[in-house]
Length: 462
Image 1 (cartoon, one colour):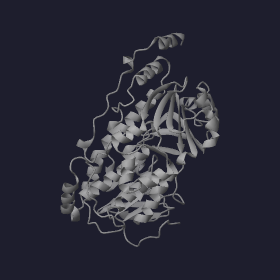
Image 2 (cartoon, one colour):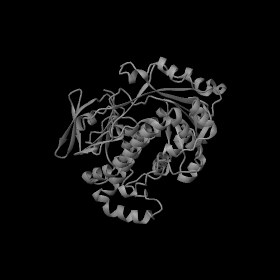
Image 3 (cartoon, rainbow, N blue to C red):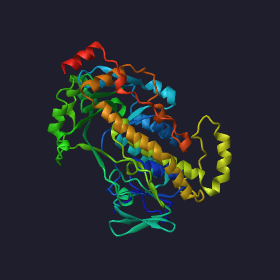
Image 4 (cartoon, helix red, strand yellow):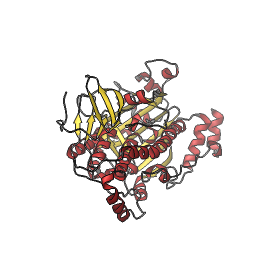
């Protein structure tokens, strides 16, 4: 075994299973409350695979509170616009001015390499005294009188008052406690992050996040690492998956899926990594994440499809909410927390709760864990259900063909660039209680679109 930090010799207050972004961000959030936190990672070392991530203001707000936003800015990019285009003719459909987004929500929209964000949280955990252990494969979970116990592949066990399962889409805890199956969308994603010089002749928009939406496919582009790298994501529906074949999403399908797209997209396809691809899977939402003293978090609780770029963000929010409810429900600080909350929270910022104890490993009293976990589940389940179901709906919207595509395009072109009705419910402050969850947007029916003469002629030709 290869511990990243040596064992402390003390029993932890919380064990977190999984050392990805969700696990580490939650470990850091709980350590800031003075709790002893142990993270168990099954891999030989901590790390992340993939390429770029988009993190919206509901995440950069939390990074700022954690004191990590400046470091993230140094490693990431603050794009100027998010632009959606039609993948067939490259015409602009709609855009978000991301500088105006920052003015509206108070925090920036950022793109960052997944491994860079993971590294930020890993370093923060080390500074906070989180115990980080690798080569720990969890095989089973068990309830105890005072908490929960986990079983390891090497025959060992560990226990704590609370166990947080942040072990991803294929979570052992999810399989054990819920028993449902992953859901395939029949779509697959290819990724690539390449030096910016390799794409400058392709007519890319270096300062924007650009999304090309097309029939049964889409293509995403944006700069990374201070603009030195360029990230691309190609997503398409796999005919082999639809036919029930096991070897689906192969490079030949990639090329065929984008053969009819515009020049800007076709020029990017040869740069995609062809030795790996990601099948786009999620799970149906579930209402129960907490089982005794075992709680699901991140993709173990609510794995979404990627269309809203909220997967990692939801995991980070989960940990922030959990830690806030630890602060609210810690007996030793009940009086001080209420007094400080009255002094700090003036009604202009519902997230302005007092911290319990930010000293690494400090004694912060004993949380009422049942109240903490009940409060966590009460607010996060509904928000994440909305994101999961909206992500599925957006995937269908992006990939329309024929007349439906033209109706979608007409509606998007008619949108005011400063209409935030579709983002306020998700980019605003993270709710701590169910009554703080903002109202959802109102969908616009495709049937309401008025097609111009050009669109009518295109429909007739089809």
